[in-house]
Image 1 (cartoon, helix red, strand yellow):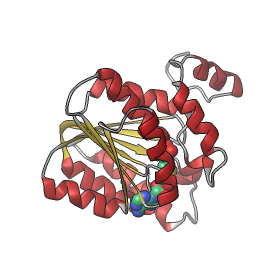
Image 2 (cartoon, protein in one colour):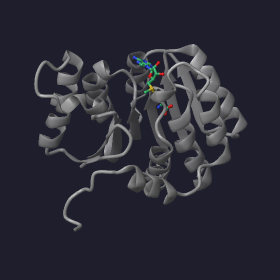
Image 3 (cartoon, rainbow, N blue to C red):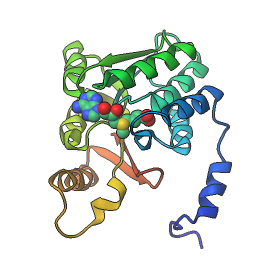
Length: 222
Ligand SMILES: C[S@@+](CC[C@H](N)C(=O)[O-])C[C@H]1O[C@@H](n2cnc3c(N)ncnc32)[C@H](O)[C@@H]1O
């Protein structure tokens, strides 16, 4: 019975969604606002948000970074968890190249009282990472959720920035199932598939894929 992962039926998915800690009200509001924007499917699911909040509480990062803010659902999920920990000097930085999305995220960050913890940068993930490389401060947790094409580069750079014992969370590793297609995969999906496989073979990390949302890969730096 318990030695394999069950495919999720609508009923078991509903049950899973019922077993979560309640979604903070401000996140429900953010989902409603995002539903009126372009690309609401880009937002992580509420269950992934609760899962990431739990990871934040387990990891207790002092410095966390996110690539791909969009309207801020994952950012607020992590930021509110950090706020609950009530530790001092904690920072969560996120970057987004689409300014209108970042503006929505910033509005909700301020409304949630997270301005001391969260900083959003409008710009590219590449430039954003350069800032941390120049600062030479170890990162405790990195969430990668920007353009798939950039994943191999973002992952390699985040892994270098990460302290031993730190965590990378890679989102969308199933790419809506495209990663398992056998023939004629798009170049960017091939590159993602190679990255997923390379991570599994890398003895310097411990990884596990989680079937939540569009697939999440957790990578712990040994
Ligand atoms: C999947 S969405 C992020 C969803 C977000 N984490 C959430 O939970 O709502 C990806 C975002 O990354 C942004 N993006 C894509 N490529 C980027 C890049 N190279 N630099 C910065 N942002 C990028 C897109 O504009 C988009 O808003």
